[in-house]
Structure formats: C-alpha cells, structure tokens
Length: 191
Image (cartoon, rainbow, N blue to C red; front, side):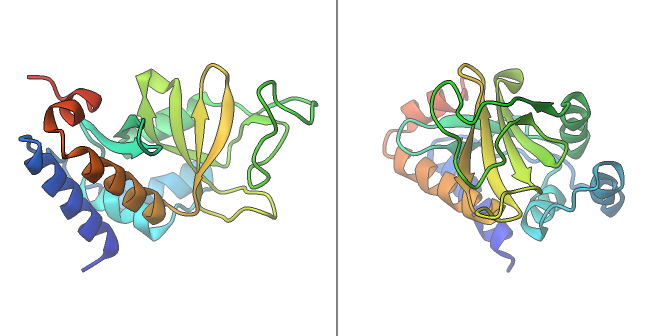
C-alpha cells in the first residue's frame, strides 16, 4: 500500500472518530496531473500526485498546518491549484530581512512569490497558502513545503516533503480527536 493511501486512510479514520464523513472528489486523471508540468514546468513529487489520484481536491478542510494551534487548509483540485498559480506573479524586494524577522535559509530570499512554487492547499481564500517548492535554496530541498501567511505577508518553512507534511498534519488532527467537538469546530465542520 502506498504511503499516501495509508495517510488518507488515517484522515478518513480521524473524520469517523469525530462523527463526520470524509468526502472525496473524483480522482484526477493522468492528463490533469501532467497538465501541471506542461503549464508550469513544475514536476510535483509522486506523493502529491498520489493524493490527487485519490481525490482531486477537497470540499472540507483536510490539513492542519502547525502543531497545537493549527491552521486548517482545503486541498486544492488541480484546476484550482493552476488557477492560483496563474494569479501569482514573481515579486521581488531588496531587503535582506523581512519586517518580522529573517526568512528561513531554506526558502529563497528577496522573493514574495515565485513561479516555481506550486500551490496545493488554501485557507481563507488565499490569505494562507501551502506550496510545493520547486526552487529551494542550497540549504533547502526540492519538494519542501512552504507556507505563505498574509499579515505579516511572510513565507515559513513547513516540512521537508509533502508526505512528511501529510503525516504531521494527521498527527496533529489525531491529537485533537480527544475533543471531537473542538476539532469539528477547528475544521469548520458545522452541522
């Protein structure tokens, strides 16, 4: 069994434990998946492709970014991810330090957004965005997951890979299952 299938099954179990059904969308086709590289030049890793093959996006929030006080995220369909990618322009600035501190050395400096960052999850209409990073620094790793947070408009390093991110997300969600009502509220799963 593929690792992504195991993590998807864990997520399904988490939803069951809090009294909800994990709805999935139709799987992405090979053609939809190959449209990412043909349009963007970004070849996302097999783990992210595998999740799209299980469900081409989500209608509820599936991901938890951060530990105890996490931010929930929707998994974007490929069409939505490409739409967000098309909207981003490469913005640069010259200061070495960001207003709220230095950027993690694994993420390119002087760049507000980058054409080699592929969005795959969103919160609050795009004020929070998770990216597959296809252009890390020498200290980073291709495929690391980075996180844009609006206000203070900064980029944060999140995880070394999509699979690591998905595991950590599920670990956080599992910790919250001790209080199903609180987790349903945190994921906006209201009746």
